[in-house]
Length: 138
Image (cartoon, rainbow, N blue to C red):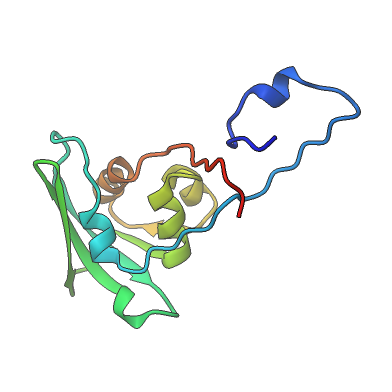
């Protein structure tokens, strides 16, 4: 059986003959930061601005500093030269974008740097923790 990471079934079905294995079922990568943020549909009461520094060694068009503006359920990201409040590499951003592990877990693991807590909180509201699960395995 394949199940999401937070499935409770393994807690109820315990037996020496059963083996539990954790592993990723899919891979995803943000290849266009501006388009990825524009695709988000946050709750309309979320608003604000953050500057996110992204490093992507394999896609120079996808790295730099982005001003992420959130207003009325719409998100835009444009290139800027402002000082970032949060800095990530593309792997960390991709994981946070899919919601698993959470941005807080990624931060605790040292995967991002934060210089402005308000900007980090806005990013965490834009990229909430969620369970990623695909029934297929490919």
